[in-house]
Image 1 (cartoon, rainbow over the protein chains, first blue to last red):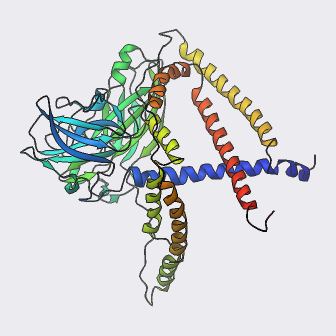
Image 2: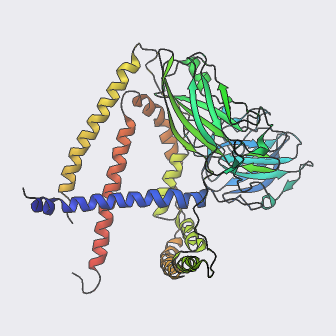
Image 3: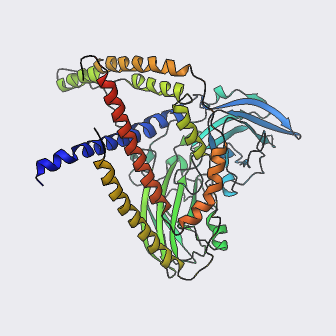
Length: 431
Length: 87
């Protein structure tokens, strides 16, 4: 067959494939980054109201306890903590009919499996102490099985010492991030908090060697479990019961004073297998300044009790300086600046003109036909991420050696069959 | 400025459509969807031990995007042919 004939026969298929890729690219480029970032997680500035999706209703008393209540307008899941001295965590249990019970201090909700998923409901958290501070409802897209940091999104109310309710609109909670200072050079480093991570040791004494920068305000802070934690997920879900207890809890890691590298002893008895490690540097407030959350995802494989491989999957520092197009000085000695300014003025759209599209989406996201899609997505995101397998094969000898190649074989077969189907489908397309 | 004006035109065009759509009531999705998924997930995880469920989901996603693109193209083409003078 001549190339021209081949082109005539296959051009419509190629066109549709290119169209599919373009649509996928548009969805990936625009929807999650711009719309989701701006709508679901607004850019916070000092003193700005951050309660865009959860409406505090005030307080009520249930069983003799003061309860803060929120009307949740959109789907959320996560856990509830307080974020003010003294550090006191309120952990949420599954929402029943009207409120969430809070536990005692000193426990993070995500350590105790206290996740919740809510939509269009009124919830509350019991305030059982009289400490002044911010009480926050935090939510994220999942639990320890996802690599997004927990506590990423939040809405807070302020509780004064006299237990009076303060309007949420007056909460100056989240501050713009500051650059992290490289302690070696003293230079502001906008690019990274984490620089490297290694797993060392053998199965009974694994340690994480984590290199990260601290800001000068963070020096001297030690033993801050609210600042940095790590969790481990064994791939394949074939835990022994003992491992499961250890691996699904978050480990509290210490901070090293004035240093940018530390060895985190993990010291659990890891069986052979591949482990995904999530290390989160959460938003914390030091001396009145909140630093941005960062996380690192890391994999290591243990075989025969020895670490045989390790890979850094991703480092999300949340500190990358934005590449902003800015006006330059226009003068006789800098004529190029004048041209740059003119081009910016003529062709660079303002943030406001683009952001107004986001409000359009908010108006229709719950309306047909979009509401059917967003509603289903919200429902899917509300699924408990901590589900355990309905049945397992127990501790079968060589199970990894058997199942891993089998899965690879099945996956290869699936792709092969799909490729054939896809080719046949493309040929049947009418343009 | 030029881009802003173009963006503004597009914005008002979409606003016109959105205003009509906004007149419709909110869609109510039954909470039983997440309950159903949650009920299925343990079995999904069990199956995932030996069968590459992620691959299956990826194939479904690719096919849905592909067919969506095709339908979108057909719709655009249909609308295009409705313009007077174009056959």
